[in-house]
Image 1 (cartoon, rainbow, N blue to C red):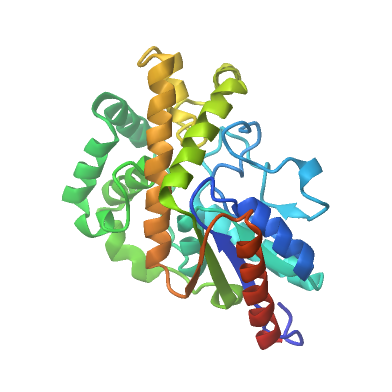
Image 2: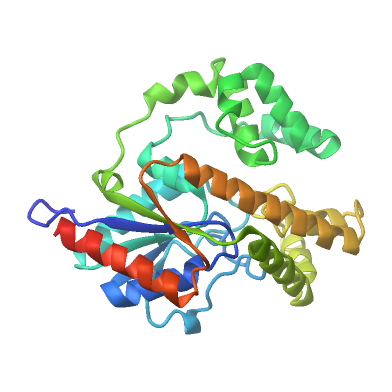
Length: 318
């Protein structure tokens, strides 16, 4: 942001999956002349469509969307990658005189923007393949127990099922000889815009949220999720990639590899996504300065409340 411009806020709309973040983001963007910057770790990938809940272009109401559908699924795009590109996107939106709106549920992305990661070593592909084999043979929780021995402090920041980040922490420890938790002090300063973040978190009724997750999961499978994953694998996307390790895709890979039947894949996906939604809410409760909003993002009362608060915050800053 240039020096002669006021320190306007950067608004982030966050919350669990299936809570209506995208709808709310578009509503706020239309009212406050904003542009949306995707903050979802699966929506960055091209060709990963059905289980991502991406808003189709024709439903975006001409609101510009950034950092969506732009990464090949073969690439293991990281939170650090996103944070660097998000800082650039925020600056570009503000240079156009518009309001940046970060919308999504990937808390680690926002954490990487607010507290940039330390410079980490490049991926050792042989080590990664070895860890992938261990994970496939013994499960994601086993990797978490390995990390507890190598870097117990880091496990306090991660969840057992968050295997890409657990695995990366193991890699850093084995490649550098030092726990990742001890290297955090090497992190660079955050971009200036990160200090202006105002987070609004959606908090829907838990039972209704879980019902929506179950219904949406069934709809994804009915819409051809299995065929989408089969096509991606046929194109050469690794089954161990971050893209296919995402919720909604991981269990389909297991089904196609003969490790579970279709009914099991559907039910386990429902459970995975419900657990993920719970972890998202826990994550955002740990973040500082979050304004909690009860309900779903497509409810009129919640829309009005968030818009009123966002407008007040915006007016206060300018």
